Image (tube, rainbow, N blue to C red):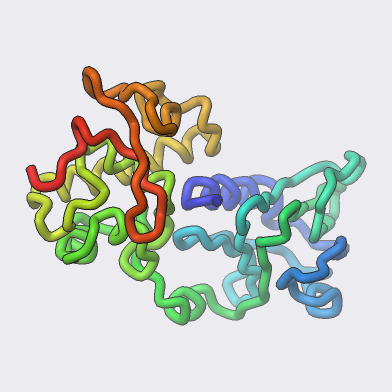
Length: 263
């Protein structure tokens, strides 16, 4: 499922290719069983421009200072891309927004788990969802208070969108792997210094993935993402092997040889 880096890469694509261009048409593809605005609601965007983008956690927004905004959630396999109008569109396009000058913003979602809605205010939407601070914006003290004081498993704390918005299973595992913390360790038992290291690693990991445009093959070879299977050799220690365990209902890939609970 797309996480914060994929959402940020998508936001950057919208910003680069779809801002300050007059919208000339909006059309829907086959959208049965999907949560999208109606054609009549979307028609209100014709003649206007997207002038701003925002992102909070995994949520993407495109609109203008005074609204309305499109809130876009990619779901399991959704994507947004800007293409020339003359290009043959890909399959499974659910929403097309045409701009003056010959480009289109396409929302493609083969599995139909994504959704789009109209909202008036981004901050009110974020508050209404009860989302915690964005994982790229949260400060050291706030991270320590929200994550480091949790009495449950640290993996579950990282995944709680009410504590920290944007981190999903993949990058939570990566951050714990790189900092040597066992996913089942009680967060409040992890030393303060290691909580600070975890925050720094999380920020660096998310930033590095964004810098590649969320292309995983460009990430360093010693990352867990390249060895994320049971029995794979750990790239961080001699003799360690990757294993998997359910933590808070989520599959947690880790190396028990160097990921420990309390040190």
